[in-house]
Image 1 (cartoon, rainbow, N blue to C red):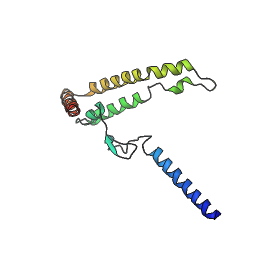
Image 2: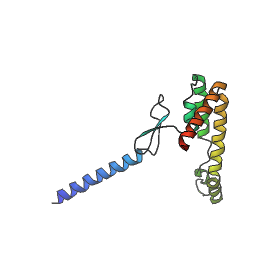
Image 3: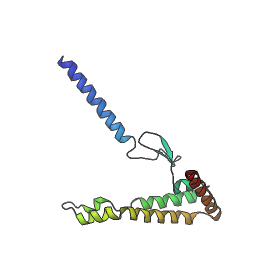
Image 4: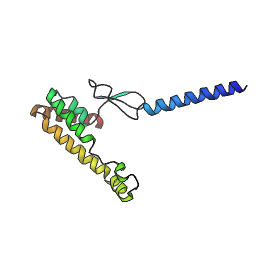
Length: 146
């Protein structure tokens, strides 16, 4: 009797731990699946979605290898620019005012960084690509309105 209870408890613990680990790994750290399919990401349920927004529109353009490289560099350089709440902590202290300031300006800073990134990417495009970009953006907007 004790063996059955112990076996059932052990099996339940293993299954629960496995499900918990699967759920937390399933989409918390959305990583690109591979370099060739950089527009595909995995969400929490495991489905794949293409990038939406301006980056998704840019990826639909016929970009040269050099343009792709420059855009990747721009995106890479913007990743580390956001100030995080970790900046409010030191090894021995917590700066409450800095924490509040970081959280209250976070959205505004993200918008400014994204605007700069889009501007930098837009500058890389040729005249024809800029025209195509506008058409694709208009199509995308009209799809959501109707």
